[in-house]
Amino acid sequence: MPTLFVVGPYRIVIYLNDPAPPHVHAVGPDGYARFELGMARNGVALIESEGIPRATLRRIAAAIIDRHAECAACWREVHGGNVTSRKGS
Image 1: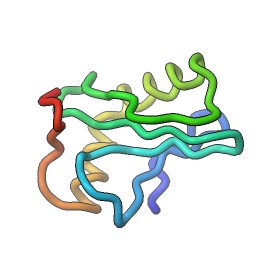
Image 2 (image 1 turned 180 degrees about the vertical axis):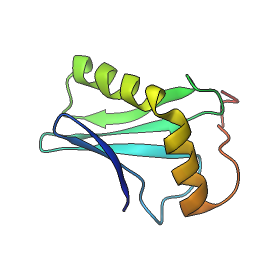
Image 3 (image 1 turned 120 degrees about the horizontal axis):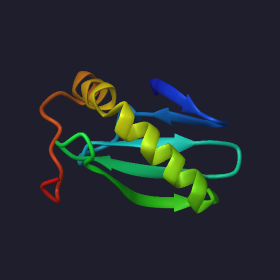
């Protein structure tokens, strides 16, 4: 599971055997979240979360948006293909 970067105590990761749609996980001591990656730079959507306060989720989402190209490139490297969203983002 490659760690892309860290936001506070949360590691932003991609699981090697995780199916599409393209997404990243935020994993930390108090909870986790999963964010779908759309094609556009700001195409990031919260799919699920548990135990992470809303303000922290916003901070994590902003960091993923800022590093969208890096997240998308890592997804392609790990899983192949293009980054496309179910929602067409």
